[in-house]
Length: 430
Image (cartoon, rainbow, N blue to C red; front, side, top):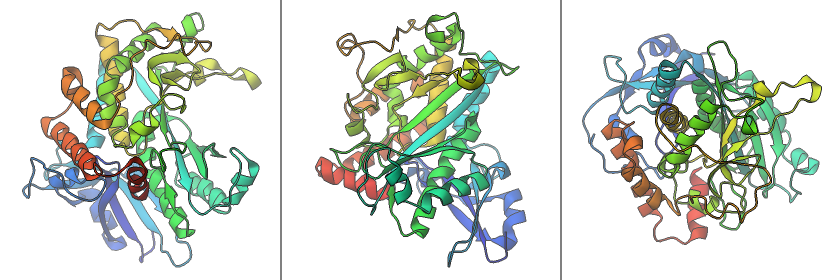
């Protein structure tokens, strides 16, 4: 890092927004060791920049303690200087973990899964977003792929340089829509990369004079932007804990129980994985988002999809097999999304839950008519959260209360808008 650069120490808040503090390059060594100051009430900042009612008020102090393993360098481009960006854990002033830190919530969930089962998590977050000001092009077309150059090639190179391991970069179905995926990584690393990826995309787009949005919907009649979360489980020796070639749909017993926990608590989980008022305009049948609370093979209407595997070119299905959670978007905090999915899966493994139906790829819409439905809106999801004593029991009360307050404040902020203006408001923010 050159002397004219800064180090930005960051966290992701309950609105899924990156916030933090910067220091001169000359202070880097000290800050990486000692962190920077932070304020508990910052947890209550809404997507619109207001502070929701919270238990912290004007008192209290925290530290943002950098995790040097997350540090990335954003190189200079034109008149824009480079910057060093590092993710942090929120701690008490003496360095002990703060119970309301979203990243600590995810880490503890992974630790508890490992302690209870010996299993490790591999994950990947797939992001969709839309770019403004492009010429009209066809879905999935080479013309759209080329229409955004050199941004696209620079983005892939930037992600690779930052160590985020880009996997695919593609033109998507929706108008001006693209998707970027990263290679699977250990659970917390994958969530960290999901936090960083959005900022790298936005920053590079700004430097190209382009606008992007990760909002769930830019317009009620348009295509939605999701964040599909892929999860697989491995034993301590690296073997798949999900895949059994002899089992129904290839899913092991422990995999079925993991899925059962997610399905059983799904309506409460959505208060974290789809936590904006516009999220639920996307989560409706026939949008290929999530049309109901069910587990199915290769079905994009399922809340939990068993993804396809391939033996082409010597591919090993056991290394590819994973579950895809489809009811998440970029208004969510990736650490909380990962944490609640792991907690729910662990509850399924260790608890007594009904064995889930694994619907085949051939299932018809009529056959799925009786499956549980998703909440109709964020308010309903928050009510389901309040009623689910298992899910609420995973959280420090201050973290839970602040999350609910932030989401209620966001609902209120757009309550007088119609769906078109509501979508536009979130498209501007995200």
